Every structure is written in structure tokens, then in C-alpha cells.
Length: 216
Figure 1 (cartoon, rainbow, N blue to C red):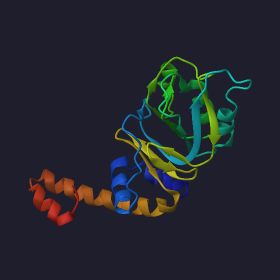
Figure 2: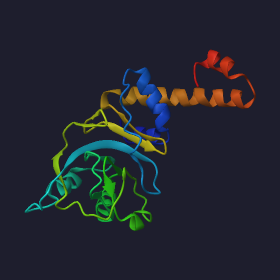
Figure 3: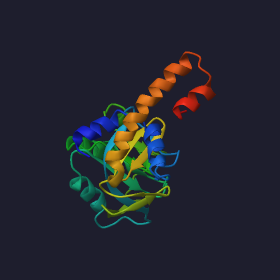
């Protein structure tokens, strides 16, 4: 999927993409409902780069090493996707990391963890999806242990190079091998949904519309 295709995907919505993935047999691609947009930039779309963060109970000699390495390895169009085990005891993310990512064209972060610095993030056009916020620093509480390797987040297997779309409904992950077909079918489904919407708005009975189009 090239940059033009990613731009087309970004204009879609997570529900229609999830429906298409169901049709293709990928029925476990949506992240948990507690992972939500935490900033005013409530849409994220791009190519996945993965990381895992785990709780620690000591301050490392060199904190943030793999976290910084992940940011250095990402390229324009990437989205950082982090399995942090739904850790709520500290903030994995913040304004300075968002600034670094935005400067190199990274399109956002999706994590099963918390952020801080919402006062600053609210002024930035950078999507942060997570489970909450806390002022506590991750140093000595949460540390990145793995980057760029396959992860399992909320039962979804996610690999670097997959694609991700998040909006107000939530987050869906598109396997790289299914990305082109998913985009094609999603665009077709949007067209069909537009027709269904017009007929429903005109008062055509729901059962009749569904029998005709198979869309609801």
C-alpha cells in the first residue's frame, strides 16, 4: 500500500473496514474498546511499527533506550503501536515524544497505555490513542523491551508493516497481505452504504432495503 492508498484509507471509517475484514475472514482485527483517541486529532492512519513495554520496579542505568530506538527507526507514514499491558501506573507517552515523531512524519501512536502532557497535546495535530492519562513518568515503572517484532494486543496479532486505522469508533488493524483488497472492498461498501442511507432516508422499509442490498 503506497502513500496514495494510505490517504484513501484515511478517508474511510473503522467500522466499514472492520466489516470488510470480517468478510475476508479476518474476524479478530479490532482493538479493545478502552483504547480511544485522547487528543483532538481523533483519526490515525498509517503503517504499523510495533513495540512492547513492560512494568519494571527499578530505574534502568540507561532509561528510555529502546523507546528512543523505536522513534529513530520509524519513518514517514508510520504509526507506533505499543502493547504496554494496559498499564495505568505511569505515562508511556507525552508531548516531547510526540514532537519528535511529528517532526519525522510519524502519523501517531496507538497504545494499551497512558499518556501525559494533555495540556500540550491538545495544541498539537498529532493523534494519540490510549487508555487514559496520568502525570507519573514511566522511568522506573515501564520500559520498552522489544521493538519491530510481532505483538498480540487485545487478541489481535500485529506486525510491523501492517496498517492501522483509528477514529471515534475505535481502532482496526489491517494485515499487510490483505491491505489492497481491503481498501478496494471498503470503497465499494461505502458506495453501497450511501445508496442504502438514501433509501432509508426516503422511508423505504429497513427489511426491504436489507433484502435488496445486504447492507445494514
